Length: 287
Image (cartoon, rainbow, N blue to C red; front, top):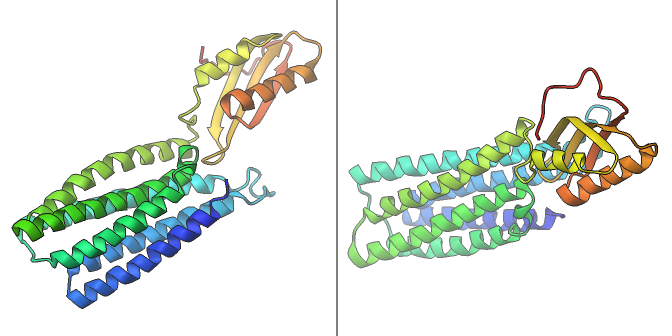
């Protein structure tokens, strides 16, 4: 899936929103709006990182990078998760300070800007809604935008509450509650991206099921030295040794490689055929 248009629109929309929010902050003297504009500027940077990674992943393999640069998408997802967690930590810290030192904020201006933010961030998140189900890099961009939409929604509720009651503590209280929810989601993205960056088996693939499927194929007598890892956030590779009794090796290879791609989404498989188990096989077993 080509995510170029999605990144282009989301970067454009969020850049325009940063300009509007910063201008509103300067005109009203609201430090809260200026701080949020700075936060949204980091979101634009995160989108640019994810976009750049998606572009790099399309580059052909070279002598220096025989697998291509697909790992850039995993690194981008990891960086986006870290950026979200750092941003959430900053919001919680600032909110905690507001409890001890309440600040009078222009509720109506914040309400208008936050409503605009909901539209921009929700629209940006929807651009990645489909791709985020199968692409961790797109998921990072989606969560970034969805998190900001949630924060803007919370700001709207807080602004309405402050306009109606004058309770300034609503602003930091809502900010902390939403930030904690975002942190839990971002932590999951961080764990998954870190797992893939350490050559972990992609979450959607069960190595036990793969080994069982291979071992259950006609002519396959044994399966060992099975390794599965992510080449990018959308591509998976596999290497395995299989002991077979069939004479038509090409037919076995074709059947196994096609089945791995069709049943497990593993598009790049390297299968070593053996007549007898090799002496260097590892003790690794999944069954």
